[in-house]
Image 1 (cartoon, protein in one colour):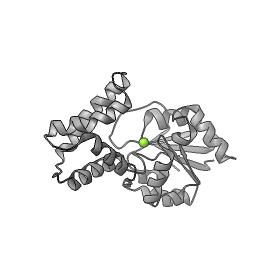
Image 2 (cartoon, protein in one colour):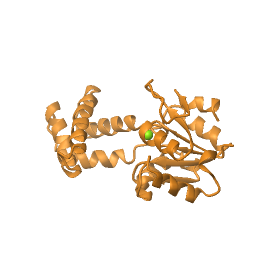
Image 3 (cartoon, protein in one colour):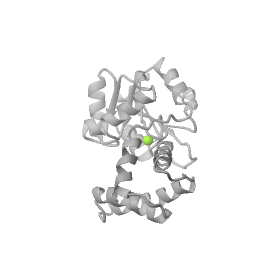
Image 4 (cartoon, helix red, strand yellow):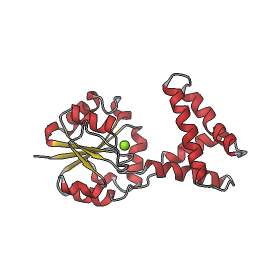
Length: 223
Ligand SMILES: [Mg+2]
């Protein structure tokens, strides 16, 4: 019998993509630059390239932060100080909390039936603050973050900590709900939890998941 549901935050409860867009749009506007939607594509193209370089060891994270917005502004022909805008952008992003469609209804439904825990790869204070801002914190008994635990999903260390803290719940009595196959689904599955994948983009997958939903309201059909 299911007793608890562990829910990922970004891309599941909060719309991280919309938070990025908002932080960029407001930041540029406040600096006197007219925001256009195609600027977001330039951001993603350059940002993705820099993260690839970082993963391949060609770039440090500090260096990425130094050059990211300067590179984007150069491509867009915008005359602003890149490193300064980077600080502003990150501060704003860390406070941005735009809900995913159906998230409140789902939390209302689940909180009446199960113990709820948030489970996120991210800095602790930031994630708690964003949940509070979105008025979602009240639904959770505990917010588990990689920042606090010192281990990330999908590692067993992350989930071991969660279950020790939660007490009196076995993995097989719990559900892991999230949008990431490689962190939420793999992590939950390997730990013996029931997994529910939020697949908003119609991707194909068969590994690590017990159930798949196309929108959050479909959770009612499963638990
Ligand atoms: Mg996610």
